[in-house]
Image: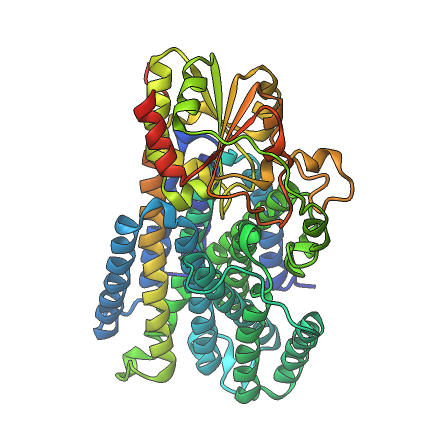
Length: 464
Length: 101
């Protein structure tokens, strides 16, 4: 196949990828969008085979390896529980990153196969592009591995910080640039390996100081990086499909990071430079005095909700941990049978990744037109009888609106306290990720339900 | 004077960033998780590079030179992502249903 013809087909697959993302503007069109994406991928792979034009023994090996990887991927995709989605996405990002590194290494070792010059005499532009692709890919890989370990709970989610951390990162970042510069002058392979190694290290150092509730930003950011790595390789290979895809994925991840940061009223750099809880320890000490809380049980909760005319449910990460989404749906079904109007309110940063709560509720067969975003539903709390807070904490804290001293001041929060009564399911009075006390616990209209989210919800169903 | 082909690729890249910007802002927030998994799947189009790497010089007989091996490894990684990414996205999207009337 001629190079011009294959370039046109790569363009078509790039356009199909754009349509795949476009489909996600509504759940109705999203499934069709996914098929566009699959078609784009199939075209890109077939065109590559045709343009290489070699159907010997190597081709068979490629198909075999493709099927091995494909079956592993399909197996994971069918078996993974929906609650494990954040770590799955982090894991997948690491694979894209590593694949980018491997392709860059291969191109460096055998540039003639890619028309980039010869070994030790690679075109300057191609060398810069492949170094950038390899460096960003390596950062994506090791960063995603750390994110995966933290989300999976293998590694503590707490931020790991040490003295001089930012300075070290700065030095390493500059040394990457210096290495690329000298690599371009000498074409030495040891410099290339050093570049890859340092980039792996940077990925680790970049993610370890970020923890817990900042995870949505981390995942979005790594999503973005995997795109830029793909684009870097796309420039090296002069491949339109890769360049378009890299740009799409890169900007998609960047927008998601922005939305997540805005949901916490924090700047991107503030998140990247380290833990929230770690910097603001002063508040917890002065509010140590015991304030009275109203303690309720499942019976009280069932009574309140049965007699309500409208209930708003506020899910958070705790719901995912307790796997309470199915029990929650059962509870809502019973309430709806009793003529209670029920809707769900989702904060942008609820959970550990963008849209985490929506997927879990969809899994429990909650229709998506009962689920609302913060801006859509926040005014309804004033007219609602019961707010049922399950596994959320910081995103309901009224302090964010009233106390300029608070570290979360200015963060958009759900106006839960405006509803007639608040049922707050929580295991203890301990503060949330931000490390600050939630004022909501001590309000007159709040009833604390101290229990595991799933057990409490099941109990309420029994009492309804 | 002729324009360097790099400039054309750069133009495609920058225009695609703009396309991505507007398309992604129109994605409904409830589908942000499927957005991440599908972007992950499509970024595995890097498999194109992996295939070229794996097949380079294979006509000469030896297909297990070091650069080919890296290509084969990249094929496995990208294939896990392609199948895993699209299938898990499909599985998620199947769950988004409207209220039964």
